[in-house]
Figure 1 (cartoon, rainbow, N blue to C red):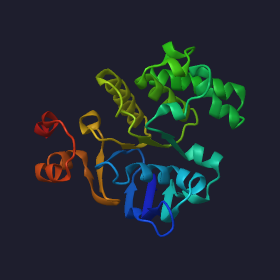
Figure 2: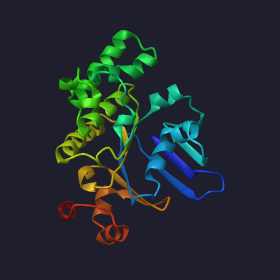
Figure 3: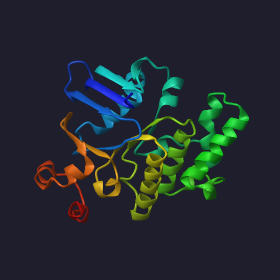
Length: 251
């Protein structure tokens, strides 16, 4: 069974308005790391919101087509059920952080699902160890660096152990050290079998991904192995994608 199946997905912000997504079709196997890229305004973030179920349940607009996560129709899931299937980390982590300490932030979602206290503690400790953020346990999320905030937002999502993670440009506003730290965590997540779909502009930070999805004006124009697309000099130049030529030269 595929982790994600998208069939003829379209989206308009309002009835009769322009199409932000136009007949998007793709499948992502379980355990694969996929990067979504393209110029600003091509529909990347809207695709993320559709995949997470946020568009259908929390936003106005017209969405058609089908999205299945682990064989389940995302549009038919209740919020609690969606949270157990797919977790999303937004480009601005401040929109997701609201607890007084990092530890409380991570425990919040499992507590709201009424998990037993011992399981909540186990989840918190496991996620803290996985992401290497033990030193931040008692810190206020609001006083952290950008990279640390993204790690805490990711930790809060991982506390529910969803098999699918959607990441909307979590590296874009980080400095070099922050990008390396978060990218290392993403590689670790792939290693434990999580399916990850990550929007990213600067491809050098995520060159370890399995496949690259390129969007243009709401359409999916190419979906192939990361190394195959990076090595296609003509396509990369024509699509005006950002990449480090040192990576290109390594393929």
